[in-house]
Image (cartoon, rainbow, N blue to C red; front, side, top):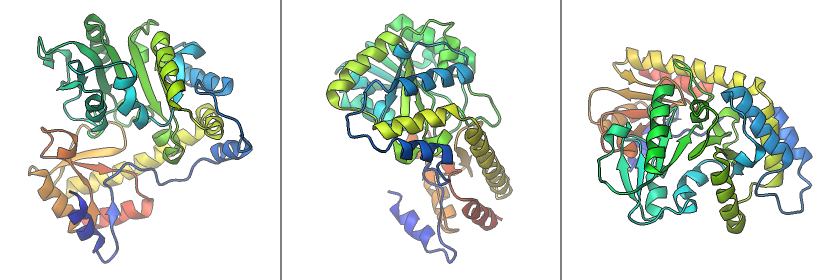
Length: 349
């Protein structure tokens, strides 16, 4: 559906500025590349549960970043986070007739994963939005900072979701892949609001955004140890193993904060430049407190905005990709080089 706009944007004399996807473009940190190379002689099968080195790095990272203490039985590496988002309902035994709750405006893979399990999807942004009597709720997804609109849930809201999900006997899964990219707000992990009791709660993390490791497919899930061990048993038999060299690279990335701080500063500068140019061009920016996107509107149907920007050689994603109530916004990614961001700013001016 976006192809005509892409072709139009590509026809610009100075080339396309593609801000439609959140794919990192900056280099993989040197410390990570070195760890990958050092572990390259890996002829055996990797451990599904992760190496002791990686599990210790995940536990250490969560302690520093989120202030939580987890045992190594409470963490599990995943092949990126999208793989887990798509497969989590099935891996948890969600069945036809069960309810999976997802945000009103969200990453499409939450719904895809529920549909793959045969479940019914309910969209809700607070527990009060979930219709009474809709059916047995088995899984609740929250996403903060959120894709596409960058809204950050306060700790009280996360706590309300945890309490409500537990009352339903449901698993609360929090997608936190943008946790490190707070700009106008300080994102909180769901693990930080559990008072040390993680039953029924999972946090899903990715190194794609924090460390530019989208190409490595490097993520992890952490939380309720009984749920993590249940997932481990399923994943062992499914062959869902993170390659050994990637596990070594993940450990190096999680242990190093300097590169994450530097990357955040790069995104902050790109964000500021785009935000100012969009506002000067007549856009309003909603939410966008954190993450890799600006959630922008010109007060018109989103495809009209897509076309307006494409005529200037800028490609963005229409809001309707993310939910039926998002038809007047577009998602604008910060994941382009400084040169391409500068080109977009000049065209908007």
